[in-house]
Image (cartoon, rainbow, N blue to C red; front, side, top):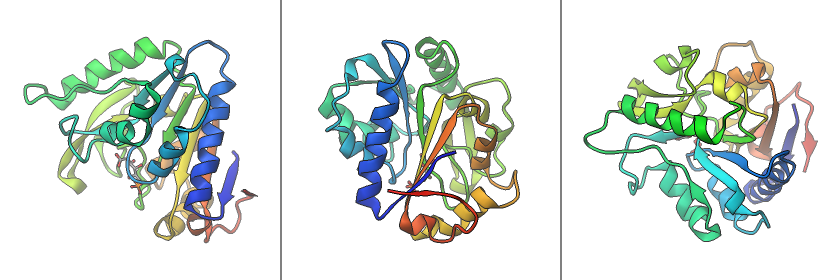
Length: 236
Ligand code: 6PG
């Protein structure tokens, strides 16, 4: 479980971009799949990805979670990624469908079928994730139904804490990825990150990664790593 700590957010973004590019270039097959995280932390990394010399035409981009909003909504993770780098590199992003006539459940079912077509093995090459200060990841929030999903790859999830619906990858699908890259930045994450990495199991949704079958890369900035006491890490 590689844990890398960069001096600040800019250094973290540069390192995360290079790490992701390296993992994609190492793929065994001509096509690769890259799952994108939402939220704010990965945005700086996405800006850096614009400069990586990757053959984006051979990379299937998809979303590890999405908000239940129209595709051009300011809260859309897909729109954030398109604005941050996808439009610039000319890659294709597979996005969940949204429509006032669709339910989150229908959209999740359609998207799962699309994921099964682009990742037939069930093991995504690279999945990016963030971590909330409540220990959620993707849209797997504490005490929500999606946490108990055992067979699906992608589901709708009602999040009472936010009074909203989300669409999210499930624990099983995330655990099956060949590489999971978790990007965590900022002082506000430091205490929960210590508990996630060094504390008791099964306390936070993101601890599902303890049972990951692939490699989990924790890419942190100094602020987020500031309370780690028992975790070996490499300084970048
Ligand atoms: C989302 C994300 C979510 C995010 C964390 C951290 O849709 O918001 O996928 O899981 O990664 O909430 O968000 P920040 O990076 O903004 O702190």
